[in-house]
Amino acid sequence: MSNSLSTAVRTARFGWKCVAKNTSRFVCQNCGAVYPRWAGKCEACGEWNTIAEEEAPAAAAPKATGGKGGRKIEFVGLSGVPETSFRLKSGISELDRVCGGGLVAGSVLLIGGDPGIGKSTLLLQATGALSRVCNAAGKPVRCVYISGEESVDQVRLRASRLGLASANVDLASATNVRDIVATLDSGEAPDVVVIDSIQTMFVDTLDSAPGTVGQVRAGGNELIRLAKRRGFALFLVGHVTKEGTLAGPRVLEHMVDTVLYFEGDRGHHFRILRGVKNRFGATDEIGVFEMTDKGLAEVPNPSALFLAERRGNISGSCVYAGIEGSRPMLVEIQALAGISGGGSPRRAVVGWDSSRLAMVLAVLEARCGVRMSDKDVYLNVAGGIRLTEPAADLAVAAALLSSVSQIPVPADMVVFGEIGLSGEVRAVPQPGLRLKEAAKLGFARALIPPARVNKKSVKESDTVLRLTEIGHLKTLLDMFGMAENRRDS
Image (cartoon, rainbow, N blue to C red; front, side, top):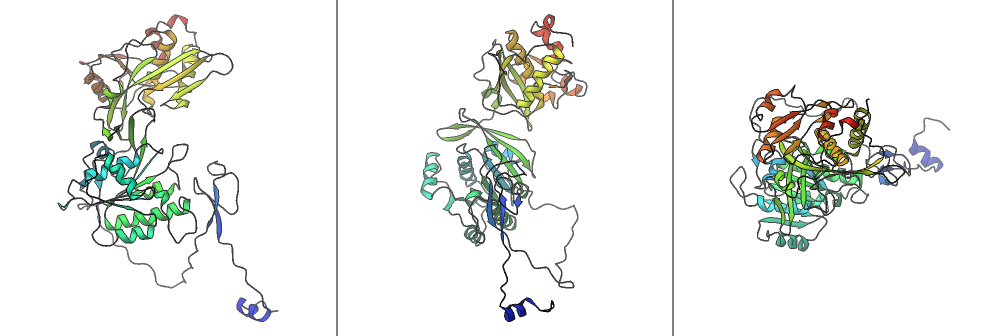
C-alpha cells in the first residue's frame, strides 16, 4: 500500500472509515478554565465539581498564503469632540454618581449582587425614572426591560408595587439571544436596555445549557457588540458565587465598561451600590440606598444615617472617618473583647477584612504589650456597610483598647489612620475631606496620623476640630490608662 494514497482513495478501495475527532471539551463553570478530560477539582480556581462537558467551537480553516487580506484601518488623531460626551442622567443621583455622572451612549454596565438584594428593583426604578427624561436629541428616552427570570405579569406586579405601572417602559420576557438581537436591531434603536439576567440567556448555536461559561461568554459578546453598534446603554444583571464574586467567565468583566456590585446585609435596610470598574468615571465610588416597602430610596447623607442609632459613652465603640470613592463617610466601629473559654480564641468580623484584624491584634500584642492572644474578639461595622480602606486600622485599634480597658472613646471624637507592622501610624489620603465631614456632623475632636505629607489639607480644618496627632500605637495606650501595664518590647 502506497503512503501517497489519499484518505478518500483508501476509503473507497479498502472500505476504511475515518473516525471523527472528538469535538467536546471540559470547562470549569466558575473560572472558565478548559481541560481535555473531566476532573473533580479545577486546578485554576480550586473549586470542586464545577467542570462540565461542553461542545467545542469549530476551528476556523486557515487562510491560504497570498489570499485576500483584511480591510485597511483608518487612523485619526486624539483631538476632536467624542460622540459619547453626552451623559444621560437617570434622575437617581446615587446611581448617576456611581456611573460617573450619568449613562454614556453605547456603554455596557454589569451589575451583580446576592439573590434578593434588590438588583431587579433598582433597575426597574432606574428605567422608570429614565423614561421621564429626554435624550441628546430632545426626545423621550426609550427604555427596554427584558427579563429571562420572570414573566411579564410578575414584572408588572413589582412595577405596580413601586408605583411605576404608568411608566413608559417596553417590557418583554425572552431568553433567546438571537431573537433579542434581531428585535433590538430593527427599527429605531432604544436608549437604555436591561437584560435580567445574562445567566438565563442562551445562544442556540451552542449545545451547552444556559448559564454555562460558553453561553455567558457568547451571549454577552453578541449583546455587547449590538450595544456598541446601535449606541444604547446596556445593563447586564449577573449572578454571584458563594464568595460574592460575579459568576461566569472572568472575561465578561473585561468586556464591559462598568462593573457594579450591589451589596448589603439582609438584616439591615441599607444597600450599597459600589463601582469596581468604570471606564467613564471614578472607581470605588458608592451610592447608598435604603430598602423600603416602596422600593429603594436614596440616602443623600449616609453618615448621619449610619450614626443615627449610635449611643455615646459606650466602651468598644469608635467613629471612623472614611472615604468611599469621592464621598466622605462616618461609620461606627464596634469591638468586644473578652477572656476566651479555652482552646483557640475566636475571631468574628462583620464588615471588615479578617486578615487586617489579625494584623492589628498582632501589632497590639507584639509592639504595645497588650495581651490579645487569650481573648475572644468580635468586630462589627454598624449599618451593614463593608470597609476596604486601611485607614480604618487606628479606629479598630481604638475600639479594641476601649473594650479591653472598659474606658469609652470620647463621644465627640473621630479616628482614622493606617497602622504599620512596627506600630507606627501612617498618613492617609484626603484628611481634610474627612475632617470637614466630621465637623459638619458636630464632632469636636479628631485622632489623626502625623500631618507630615498632607499638612495643608489638615490645617484647613484646624480651626474647627481639635486635632490630636499620634505617631505610634503606644501613645494610644495613654488614652485608656494602659501605659503602665504594657510590656517593653
